[in-house]
Amino acid sequence: MRKKATILIVLGLLLSFLPTCQRKPKDGPLELLYTALFESGIEKGSNLQGTGIRYVGLSDKGAEVLIDAQTAFKQKGDSLDWRGSPVENVDLDLTLRVLWFTEEKLYVGGTAKLTIRDPGPEVASIPTEPPVQYSNAPVTYQVEKGNYIPGTLIKYLSKQEEGIELSGVEGYPYRKLGDSIVWEGKLRERVFLQLNVRVIFIAEDFISVAGIATLLLTP
Image (cartoon, rainbow, N blue to C red; front, top):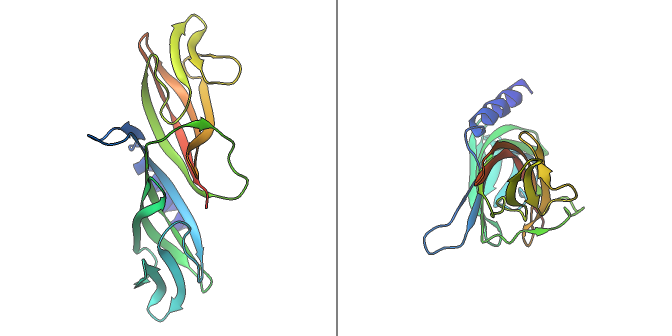
């Protein structure tokens, strides 16, 4: 457990320098990029949901896994990476390490980089059916006046005496420096976002917000 905790602490420190961003490739659709901590257990005979990683079981060479149908044998601490598209218009890049394993389960941890192409945010509740979850992705955005916080329908309208005025929030529309802004909605079919940020800078023409995002992908 100590090794596991140490690995996750180090990963957390590394991720603190990796803000989420929004970009628009030349001649391509808008993209939202997220880098999140990821940890999961994979049952024997099952795939890591949404990926081509499958835990076969123990062998005399270590943990036997299939990576897109190719056999690999892993020891504790070994890398276990995968790239693919678990959902339409979503690219996933997993950079994992084997934390430990038993006869029945393989435990992995590391980072998940997600690229959401051509998002269309809308208000939505998170499904009750347990989705694949990518948590604690650090986000930092500079939001120009009249623009939306990326991935949401929350718009920065103006700077007022009461604080910044926002549209797309429930109830009281003003926030001051250090106040929180929370959003829950859908980015695309089967792709949901929970965003929790705070106002870290206020100017007449823009604001800066920072916090964490959680991405949820449904089967």
